Amino acid sequence: MNFLAESSRRWPLWTSLGVLALTALIHIFAGTPMYLDGIAQAGLTGEVGGLAVALWHLTSTILVLLVVGLGWAIRAGHQAGVPILVAVWTICLAFFVIMLGVDVSTGSVISPLVQWTLFVPPLILLPFTRWNRSPSTVELAELHQQ
Image 1: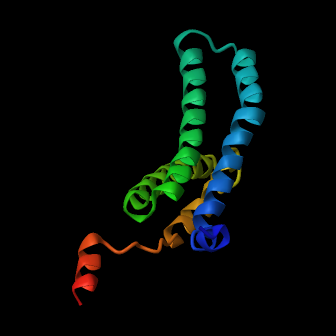
Image 2: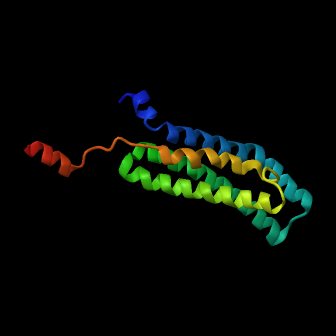
Image 3: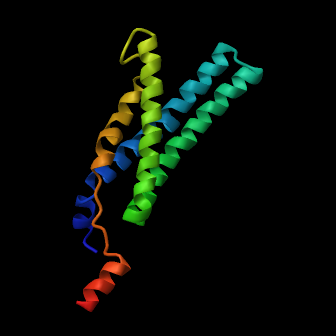
């Protein structure tokens, strides 16, 4: 398998995987201490504090699963990969819409949640991903008969 030829047909997928991996790493390693310290400093305890911590970790999990999903799509090929791409794209759209909505509701576009900008590249690029579809068994049988 020629890696360059294989990856060049899927450069939007590889680029999106890189952006989402970077997003997950920044979120987990840079954001977690800052966010959890903020919860502690705000004095959030009990159910509200627990919910804030749980939502942070659920978001971390979803970000990692987006990267895993794209990696799976790369290995899976066209038939299994397309539904995975649709699911990842839809989740990215949800993050984008919710965070941008929060920004707009505060009267801004890039503040307080600038993270929505990290979901723009996958939203734009993933629809351009193309696979070379392998011929189906029916097509192969038809070719063989001719």
